Length: 410
Image 1: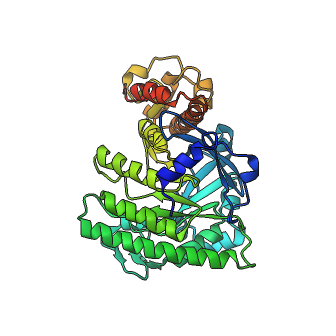
Image 2: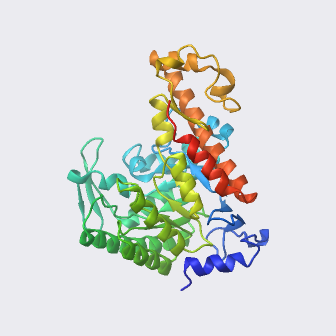
Image 3: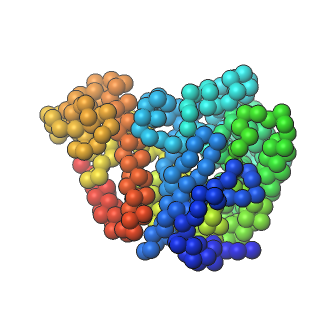
């Protein structure tokens, strides 16, 4: 089996990963639907194109979190204007509310939320495992009590795939067992082995449904595997190898950014990025801050998601190229200029820091809508700038410059 490091060298022989458009093929075919178009000479950063049934995704890419079928405070139309190409939603939350019946009636999540772009749905493994006192793990699947009404639920790897098929998402995630930090090695290994077993069952169910002519919601769905193994490098290697043996359309690095020190996060993320196939998209789950995303890009990660831009926006914190501002602070009460000069989002083009401070202070809904809108705009612009820097072979300098600036808080 080819390893990531060997494949990176092979790609380097093809003009640093530049391939002809003829290598873009329909998802789920035996050929690739992911194309690398630029590589950075000073790191593993790369620019790619991922083809889905609902449009092409430029990578590296940030996916705004629409956990319950909505990116909090924003409409689908606003996200489209901002240039979002793909959103993340969560099968666990949608399974509990509004439930499967509505998605059968409206024929999928895209129609339900009126979103024309791509959607990635997480299996909900992380959310279920966060319900520690309310869930029970077995090889067959997961028993848990709903955080909404306390009713007992049972899901299997197969039922999660079947439900995501009903949702019609463009990228589906397998069910995995995510462990807390710290966890002893034995627990990490047991969870990893179970994750691999569930991944194989998910792949088999995916294959069965894909071949079923009655499945019409989205015939071009992709399935991603999720690596586990905690903070143990040898387990991480084993997990990468096991998932590659099963074979997926893309691979996620799961079980990180759960409280471990940064050196453990990046050591294991780097190991997985190097080990996983370079001709498949790589997804680092739940990361993160602007500087963390740039670090991930430098390792060759292609997809990111995090609740920070929306959650921080609701708390009055806004991201800018020159640091984080807390607009609730009194120092902004009389500032007439926008959040960030040069930003073309509606919040910056139309409103002042003073007005936003007033809205937040008065607890007006418009305040959190505008701060959230700006933060999503900032994250999407950050990714666009990163792709440009990679294409122009200056990503290292761009990463250093932005990282130094965005750490500041005022």
